[in-house]
Amino acid sequence: MKKLLVLVALIVGQSALAQHVDPFDFHVADLELLQSKKIQSELGVTPAVHKKFESYAAEYRKSGETYYKALQAKGVDPANNTTAQEKFKSFVERLKTQVMGCLSASQLKRLRELSLQHVGSRGLLDPVVAQRLGLTKKESTAIEAVFKVGQTRNEKLVRSIMEPINKKYSTKKPTSQQEADLLRAQANMEAKNAMEKAKPIAKKIQNETESEMRKAVSAKSLAILNSLKGKPSKAIPTD
Image (cartoon, rainbow, N blue to C red):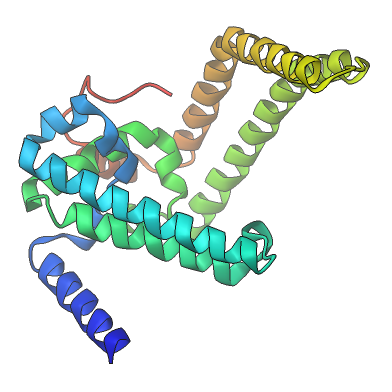
């Protein structure tokens, strides 16, 4: 009976949400963007609404932690368990439904615009976005191929940075846990600094990849995408 009541409550909640929400806006809206105070300010999120966000986030974390501990007790590895992954996904979906339900239709629309601006041309990989833009199967296939080339280039860059560092520290033999922790911290810091220096190269790869992805799309579809992005915002966080 309790499960039935929970299901009914969830359906009612989703129905109420659907009454003032564009499904496309809801799908595209990036939940993580709402962590940015600049984004919250642009959307006009009030302190009262933000307090609700925090309450829902706390509930989400508690659900995830409780379930993870239950999996550990059973010796289940979530990374290799489809059922567990679906369960964690349901926690995220519930959080998104709760949070988005606090936004007005106009706020959600703007969040969709900001989300598309943030994701850039990578949004073309989303089947829902592709359908909204009217992309053909040939265009989608070409976009995916270009993206994979970009991924390969980026992975090669990361390997070129990490392999020398891993090789350097793999030869060191700590004589105590304290020394091992120190070496691990040094390696992490060295890797972090190296990745930071490589950011311009990574950004160049990203820009070139996204440029090639856009070339695979018709002018009409790009015009629709630009319209869906809305007015450019300075609040968009940089990756």
